[in-house]
View: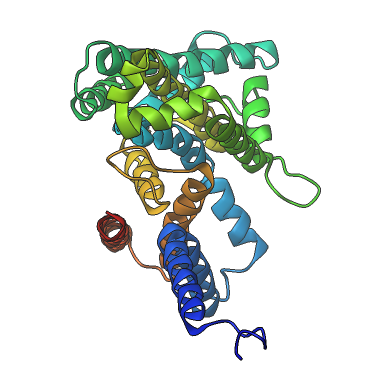
Length: 345
């Protein structure tokens, strides 16, 4: 009778409900960073009437440009199962060399000289990436030890070049106008061009990670490098390029750092670029064991950290309590990832 009426049998209804529940649980596990970001946005709007102002929102976006650029490299490194603790020092050296070459080496005239100075800065980042890649991929040294050592080396180089002083660009120079002009320029809608540039880089890496052989190899190395080797693929070469790209991206971030203020300092080596980008990647769902992570969720994770810092700053909370809160968020993200992995196992 029930069959003639076209009604679904009870068992099928139960199966459909189970499937629906699994889908919801999977969504909450996979995209919890988006939910956290939305909740933070709502809470921030309620807590502070300054949060939703265009000045504050564009300021948040502008501040995250170096983090977004460095975060793309950090995401790839973590997907391979590695880590890069040297990013802040590499970005600092790049930033300093750009300013130093403009002020001391006669490249402050603007135009082609600006591009040469940028090339020196990005080249320095690439050099650090080559060393990291050679030691980690070529000599199979632990990524944690290598990049920790390069972090200290980069900070030392930064202080040696600057002697602990800030390298100030001449405000009347063409190089200053080129760099700071780019940092301050906005689209007709008020969106900073630097932010557009950062999202363009993210879009490029979205394509690379999703649609290219290199992207697939990055995931494969993190999931099972032994299988990659048995398939006759040179995993070391791909791993080397991952660290090289991370260094180049740090060099590009160094350009942005110098352009934002028109000066460079060794103190940049102590900015939290490494911890915040690692946190952003992990909050975005990447596994520190490798094999997991996406560009979109990394961007979301970075902005989760950004909103936490922004709302606490608007509430005049000092930086040290902010560090504690960020640490708690990172631990919760890793814990949630661990619990979800055990459920799927």
